[in-house]
Image (cartoon, rainbow, N blue to C red; front, side, top):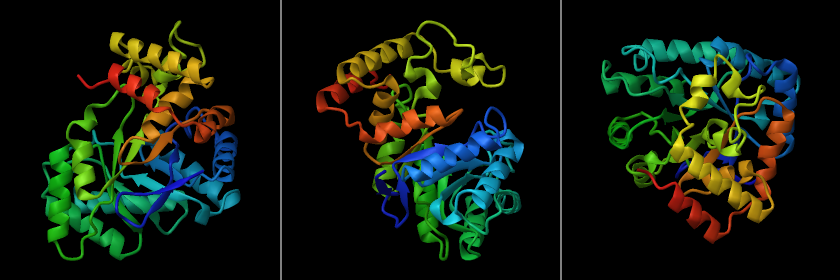
Length: 314
């Protein structure tokens, strides 16, 4: 698998990343081990995790797999410090951030993460305090690089400029955002801001939370995320009339290229300007193998233009 530079930094990651959101819930230790071994054997490196996944169980599983089955040095760990929806005063407070990072390191059984993603803008805490946590994390060696989760364009610019003006603070190198044919709103302000300031994009949910695979065209499969009481709202948020039109275009493109809808949707995001890696999740090894097979898929310019047209942000 090809690797890419994250923005203008020296961090290199696989252009397809492995997400662990289902680990500890739908994906047990055995299945997670199979996924990570398959991923690394295929040349993958970036693994995305968060302390909110299965209340920390996903990180515990990842730590166990790296201890027993996959060498730590083969993995580039991108760790979020909690979901952006956390309470104000918790997302950006120095103590809360550093405590969360220490807990993540314990669960992962490692002494550092490669990319520490701050969990969202916190208007209740001075930005200087949040950046001081980044300074401590990087200077102590607990984090090699820092990034941002889901910022707006102005938030990204504000953080970067403040970090550059503050001695000893590592400037963020990445922005982790939801990005797919169904969610192109980030192209209006965030993508240009990231490019201007030299940040790379880590795209999550590149398959439109599974909708772009076409699995929901004729209903809701019993073994799908949309059939899960926990994950159904997550998927349903991307099922509407506009999505149906885009999915149909993806199906048509896949048929014409002799490949899968998954491959078309993933390749489209993977090769968007500024994207360092597109992170995919999988319930089992078979699902992951389908995503990894996309490495060989390159969309013709005319197909890409057609998909651009049908999915233009509104």
